[in-house]
Length: 84
Image (cartoon, rainbow, N blue to C red; front, side, top):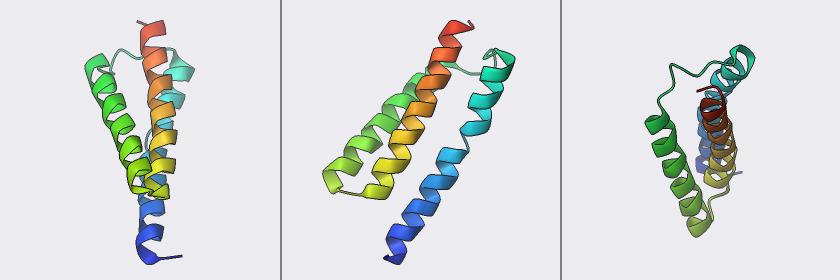
């Protein structure tokens, strides 16, 4: 595996994993008061665009990391709306 691709996968794992504790906390406590709805929406749009970019450039690390991150953000958005 090319070093650049490996760095891409490592970066993707780290940045995607960073969302997991927030999702778990929001799910567990049923509280999202500290999460900005505007930030979550902007981040979801940005991550969606990064995913599109990944497909257009055929960059698997970008695609994988951003698809997973997008799902986590959608979960947070859903929790934010549900526990408003």
